[in-house]
Image (cartoon, rainbow, N blue to C red; front, top):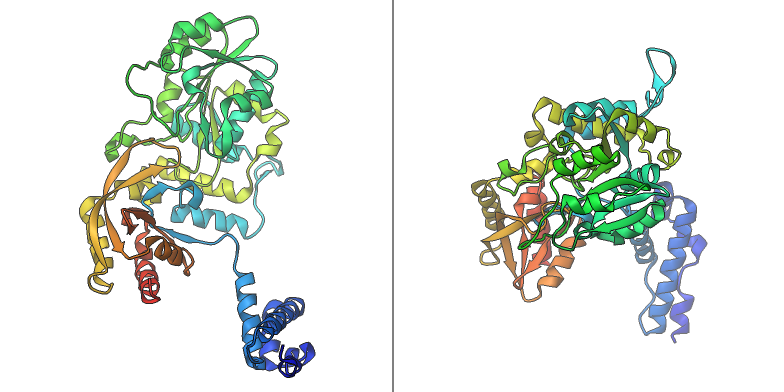
Length: 456
């Protein structure tokens, strides 16, 4: 241990008196700067004990500044999604349209008529802001917004199935991300699960045979993250709706992602539209707001007005409601569909609709800005993701960067500013322009250039 070097370390008070420290205090506060200086001194002592010389005061203060900068970075921050997964659950699913961002920003700036009737001058309902729009767009009598589709399912089961039986096909007892399992949700809601049919084939007659004096509802559940092929059969929603009405039980249809546009028009398999399931006769249909709808995180319930009104009075709803900014973003998103400009203005639909020549041109432009021979443009596949259209993909053109250690390069990109998330495939880092917003292209190029220039 070098005692002389240790004695040479500046005192905390002396460092705090430096001009650089005063600047840091103005930016971060005295308490945080004090902690950072103490941390820098502690690290310096450890290095001196390991044989290094005493750092200067300016070096110590810059070390403290670096620590403060790191601590000040928000935990939740923007990333560039170059994975090719359009609805990437881990990356926040659907980016919002400009209109939705502006709407929620305006409402968040100050007060709003969240629960105030401006005409009557008295208390109003937050559920009125999007309910009518949902009804108009889906053909339902009424609509309701909660904080996500899992909440919608829980609310429906608790309100209409608690203490009673809910009939579900064995082939639809799904588990989605985060361990959300239908049997567990049934149990927590107080409803009693009645399984019918087999894993691969369930008929209307199976539901009919299960009806008893304690049956509350039939429930259809979307297989959001897997497919069943081959010798399979599901009961047709319209037939099941007719049986439900005959037996005087509810038909609850959980569409999972839910779409208001025909996915087949975008080169994808047909995903049942919410409007189709409402028209088929379901009493209540629930679906997500931040998947194929392309809005903020939310869950929607549409259906018969008498049932929606019961839900609005159900005590659990208060725990599942959304805030003013979310409602503003939802309303703006729904109005895209009302105006007919959703495919043009909502980012996820622009990504899905992107054509190969355009994707190729963007990927080639990225390649041309990188050092010669470091990358090539290849054929690849994009996924819709987010529990939507499982197993289906879209052809794309991706930039493939071949390096000796692709995982190391991918990590450097993730730790850049902004964070750039790509995927590693066939010993190369792939960046898919389908999920990169056009105004992010320059950041992709600069991020790649920095990462490659640092020895990747």
